[in-house]
Image (cartoon, rainbow, N blue to C red):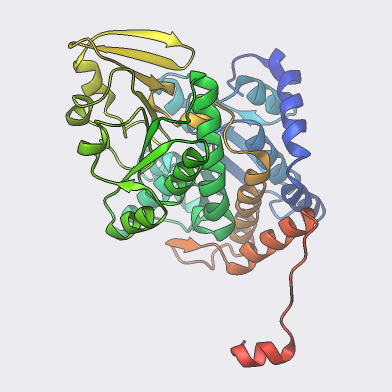
Length: 411
């Protein structure tokens, strides 16, 4: 039985789903194929992804393919109760609340796993972690899973290295049609949409500090520059630091950047990127936000220890009044700012990411029992198929190699 806040919110959720669905042509085409071929007939899929309108479209695509869907969120603040209600009204099993407590969040993850799933769709690795700790008895039934994000892949690789992973996991985040667009253009736009709408402050003329220059950091820095900010990048990887420098950004350690930043965005996938050492150096009024998966990049416990008072300055903005009188502002409780304080990536971007997810799940179903127990790449033909469908939806065409060209290139 589903566990949601309020079923009466379903009509509003349906409006949101309809709006994004009309802007996801690739996923639409995949759903039409699935409806004919039913690749998931008789299979149960447990899904933990940020529960908003685009995710609802993925859930319905998998359902059209014959899957019995069991759905929860992957972050308490990104769950939208009207979307959860719409899915339940349509007959889907959903366990999710906006602003769920830690206990509720874990309970919801457990509830979707108790369906005894055949396939896992994960975002951050929480379902897979629970399967390998609390629900190991369910592992023999699991065909495999797909992982959506960088943080989840870090966790999976660590498990695989230690010999703990017990079923194949497809690295959706590393598909070109995912990370090149979702992480760069999706994160770049949605982070600044959320910061701008939450704070109602100008970006032009400010100093923005972006921690991490992976694909998400590149997109975040590029959009900040486009909005007129002076951008500082902090990095641990010397190659990425050179990239940032050659892309026209200042590069320095966080201990130095902390003195200059007006707005901070952490995008590393690591913990303790901003700590008390950095907080001690920050300007009065600095805004702190996180675009990495978990709320550990800004050390909020250390910030609280340095504070004499905390208050809600505005929706999704908490003010920390430090003992020396300065006030720092944290957006969205330090969780993913583009989802905790916004609607996430644009529909046209998630169109490609979720098409990769859907086809990755089909790849698992089609090859059950034949894949290595490891983290595995998205097959290049899936990447190419999604890209070609997207180009067609945009009304674009590309050249095709002739027989002579293929021979010349050794193809």
